[in-house]
Image 1 (cartoon, rainbow, N blue to C red):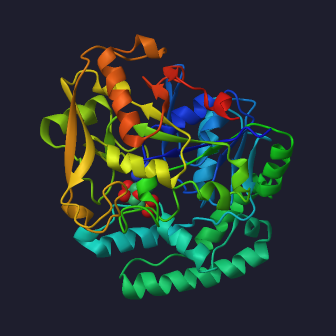
Image 2 (cartoon, rainbow, N blue to C red):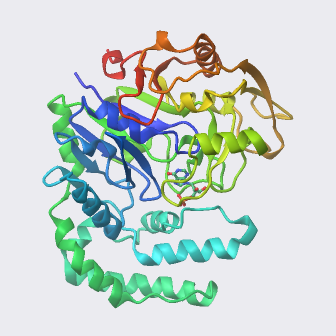
Length: 432
Ligand code: IMP
């Protein structure tokens, strides 16, 4: 019997997925990253110590877990090495337990320069990307031009292909974007320095997963970003360049949909968004100050201040549908502890002909949120580990989320530590 869980974000990223992956990995054998790149930032607090991961699956902090970076991820070899070294410094060894797909496309310095040059040219219309080269790297993949992990194994071929690609990028960077050019030799020499460290980890990760599934191993598929940053289903063009919704767990790994047994949507008890794009429940002034300071809402990857807002129940309901969610995990509930009133958006005004239950993003700039207002609990919920110990107002708020999103809240996170977690229904036990 398979026992696999997908964990993904239902908002615009930064929902606290890393902590939940880390917590549920205690019971799992494999953790798999399947899309995105080092634009993600997963902050984990273990024994009071903060560790931020960008590429390496969050479950790898447990010594018996095997980590996989699958084909759907775009990988900067240099960032990967940096992260492995950071873990080593923290006495976490990944030797023989991190495998990287031979088909994962590489992110190289020309992608980063192109990302920066494009954002600069867009000016006030910039997407607000993380500047990590994610968009250009996925473009190369779709254009069938990308260098992939397996190419690191053949230095001659790598050198020839790299020269061609750098030429292609330089022509655009210099003539169109009036940006600096890139030196192909520097990239090649730097790649040669790190490739041997990486080559040992390169594998056909789809086969590894097939075998794990045949042997009934528990697997966690770790999503990055959030549902409304999805390239197809998000607030386009203010999105990332991968599919952040559940389909990526299949295409980004090579396994079939029947192997995904429980899909957990992680939702912050309020909303945040980094970068530009519509955000109709956005808060300003005192509430924004409160949420960003108390919630430490600063990007784990770029350090940028996140925009904050009330929970958008309408979008949450859509995320439940788009991802076939099995249950929700509500995070950062404790951040709301000192608010007298808590709002949740339950419908929209000015939505026009758009579907009220499951709106699309055409005309979304004009929608106005309609809120239900709930009394706050004005007590600390930090570190509470049993649902019955939550103040009744907090339980009320959770019931309201379940009603609006039409799904059960199966887990609640009440603090940054791994064990500051309430399990209402254990996802592993909920799988029939
Ligand atoms: P990109 O993924 O760097 O191209 O950025 C595109 C958009 O996605 C920008 O608004 C970023 O701020 C946002 N984004 C990308 N990764 C994350 C993440 O891990 N958390 C939150 N927002 C993200």
